[in-house]
Image (cartoon, rainbow, N blue to C red):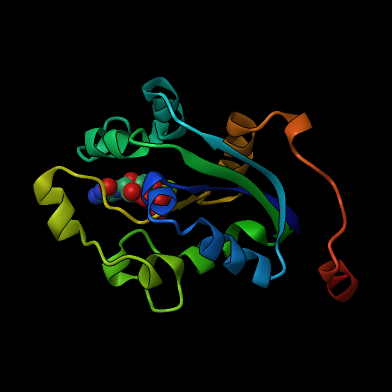
Length: 159
Ligand code: CDP
Ligand code: MG
């Protein structure tokens, strides 16, 4: 049940100075940061990370967006981390995300607006969509020696 999931704070989150406030949401929920680094993604790497989307109409805008500045990449560990981190992040479109989720509280873009412009929907954050995707994405972004094993004080109360 203890899972690792990949989270990226996309260039819009980094450039808007929201890194600390977003990380706090995961720390407040008791999750553990086990890997973290800043990366300026190249186009080739973007195609690997978004391999499921390369053929889609929104991909060119997505590639421009994800390579326009550095991202903060992190691996978050905890009970049901994949599902619960996605819940904290909220659904893809900020316009339809519920208040309390990161994508609703810090953004308001809509598909209607971005699709028409050929731009990516700016939703601040990426989080692995399921357990299989999480395993692939953690391995794509982090070497085993970049991931750390340690105890947080939360574990006294969780386990
Ligand atoms: O990120 P998430 O898993 O919620 O959504 P996705 O369907 O895997 O799409 C990946 C990313 O592509 C989204 O987070 C958006 O930034 C972008 N996207 C977009 O710009 N326009 C769309 N119509 C769909 C996705
Ligand atoms: Mg996805």
